[in-house]
Image (cartoon, rainbow, N blue to C red; front, side):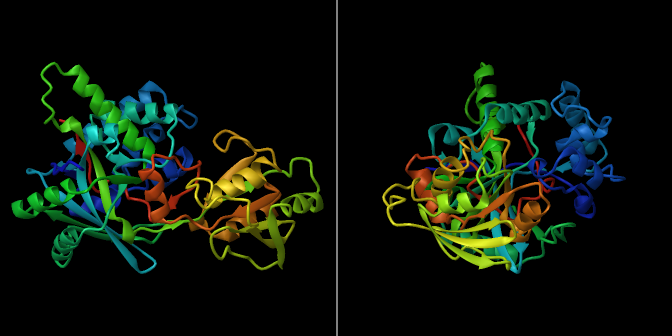
Length: 415
């Protein structure tokens, strides 16, 4: 059963939230962060991308950069740009994209739940990325950015959320760049806080939707602190890390597409013939073609779009991983034909979130940077949860969630 707790959030004053809030650290590079934070000393990028305070080219993993993050975090608090709430609360964070709103509960998730599998994952993590985030958590003694969880729909929680969101929010703004709405409320009534804790305790599992490396890092630092404390009781704040938890039915996974630099020595004609062994190939012309359902793919090559439909017998409906379109395309096109064995390390392939649209695939190929593009039909939340429940791991670069959580609305200290 899932254990959560309220916490004393560290937040910007209402009139500063739009200056402080930023995109997550891992969706932009140092140059982009430097540009977005230009002339804004209050931007959270000074804490989550602190290399922007050093000369261009400074290694973001330099020990001085991590120390700068901690220095800036202290400075933000000293200057009143971030202020800690006086009592423990839960919070509601709503995001609106394309007219649809999803409502998340901001909670302290329990480190042992991550370690024992109550908090379920569907992706592998890389140790170097874990260590980077662990250093950031250690040096700040805080979870500066939240992770993104899903939970099984719950009517009691829906009612509590509806009651608070009918009131005036603490924050309500449209983020620059993406145009998405971000709205925030505080749940401060004792009976509501207790009811939320009880409802989560009934849930057999929580699911990491986005933020596997942040989750791993936060949990590992919490466990580290427990081991180092001779007087550890299990009730310390470091036993929890910050998560925004959304009802699964409100979340949409969008497509996560691939572009490849070459055809592995094949001509376009030979490549399409090879694809035709396992797929029904239909030429669609110059107009963008979008996959219409599971096991249907969109291919862009030399100015033309093609529909690819996996033939019967090329996948196993009883294999939760093998039936995924990302597995089918990885095995039968990327590996078998193009020779791409490792999606995580091969430099010939790149990945494009569906939020950019299929026009981005066309652009990357037409520019000559890439030779061929492959668009996939997105997986469902049910598939994600079923795979996590079965203890399996999805292939790399399978899921893309939008909108991304805005960083800087709230921070969780570990003491």
